[in-house]
Amino acid sequence: METETVPEGTALDRLTLNRSLLARQFLLRRADVSAEHVLGHLVGLQAQEPQDPYVALWSRIADFEPGELSGMLADRRAVRMSLLRWTVHLVTAEDCMVLRPVVQDVLERRLLGQFRRQLDGLDLAEVAEAGRVLLAAGPLSASRLGDGLRERWPERERLPLSLAVTARVPTVQPPPRGLWRTPGAALQTPAEQWLGRTFEAAGDSGPERTVLRYLAAFGPAAVRDVAVWSGLTGVRAVIDRLRPGLRVYRDEYGAELYDVPGAPFPAPGTPAPPRFLPQYDNIVLSHADRSRIVPPGPSSPVPALPGSGSNRGFFLHDGFVAGLWRMESSRGTAVLHLLPYAPLPSAARDALAAEGERLLAFAAPGTTGGQVRFAGQ
Image 1 (cartoon, rainbow, N blue to C red):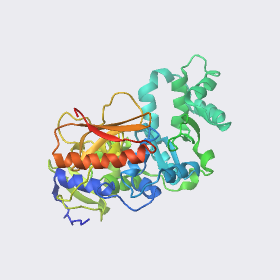
Image 2: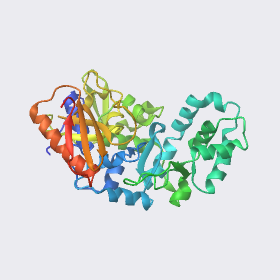
Image 3: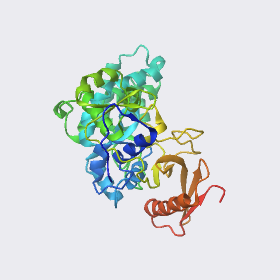
Image 4: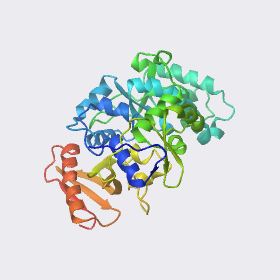
């Protein structure tokens, strides 16, 4: 893949931003790298649906094997925890220790933004310490943690109580939650206890390094893009401190875009193959202006699909979100349903069907007669 040198101050059009994003996300060409490398480079994967990261990595890594990621979770080299935007992310153990202090204020602000009334009058430090004691005895679900806290605060609701703990006490969701094709309850256990290390020993936990990593994986980006991705406040001040070492561009409307030196800029005409991504992939959630990946029109930046769970998401055609996918398995057969937002050329349908067949082979092993069906077909 050839890349271009783009002078600072250049106005970057939508296609240039698209191809740069795809390259940094390993979506122009599957990379021959480890799952740990991709997790680190992308600063984690959004993962409230436990199986979604497997599809996300399959679309990015050549010859990806699910056991690699399951092994990382089982060996405690990767964890699931609430991080960016107070959503569940799958990150490396190292990033758990580095990123969790960075987003501490995000978690507390969003907790009070949603449950201020239910928590009014409580000493949240006292609630957190009571929860820490309960969790030290073993992993607990949110409801069981809430029940334990209500023994001390019986007049309070259990969900706000349990969330008040996990907003202040860094916790992870231990396996079997998140293992490949393995059911597991969403339990919580203290991160330091699970990983056998302390946050104090993790070193620098300031936002500057996190912002630089975001730019490397999602840039060039504006201040508001960083804020949307992270949930952080005060991003402008962070960018101002970093600015001497950044490259500065502009979007088509004149807004400043910031980038790290040496990041790839593929030629805008670089072919972008079809890709299937899970419904909450960060590629569509990490910019205030999503036009670099989501075309204008009726399409939703977060696919609105009936029901819930994994086995659903969106697909890319020519680098942009072009529709939704949903997989159904029953009685030994699997069907991949594709719902394009607009009519697609026959060559594009053929390419999507071929990639869809590969997805079926990966995500529904052991089934026979797998089919790819376009809506109305």
